[in-house]
Length: 157
Image 1 (cartoon, helix red, strand yellow):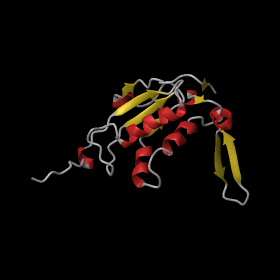
Image 2 (tube, rainbow, N blue to C red):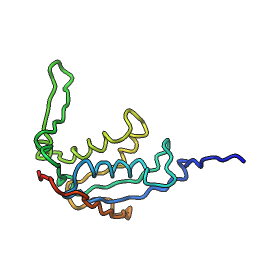
Image 3 (cartoon, one colour):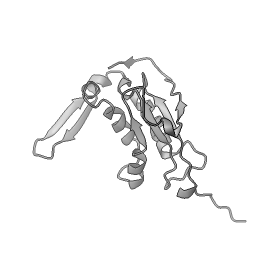
Image 4 (cartoon, rainbow, N blue to C red):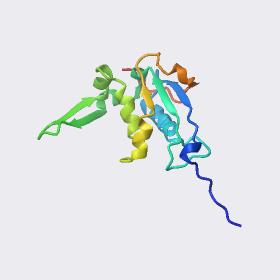
């Protein structure tokens, strides 16, 4: 008797839309939850080479929190491409800046597989908004209550 593993096909995937309120959520814990939903690892029929994750809408992305001293000590680096062109900003500066949702976006991006066309496609299913409203009501999204498991040592921006 031969046993085979059922593999999900792209045509068989049904994607859901979920909404997560990021207010007072710790960045790393929320990012790992979002990355798991984007990849589809919460599904019993998860297939690694098929995009079977959900669409994730995050509201209040600018109200995320950091534990410990990460607000001042965590540094984001970028390079201009010119000699000596390395730039750095702390997490607090990014949250107080023009695009505070990039903190959560970078955290989720770095939890997905690296240098993969599938990971880039899965990241396009993430929508981040700094307000409690979002333009995706037509998709009838399901609201997921992301409960903070360990709220001690949380610092606000």
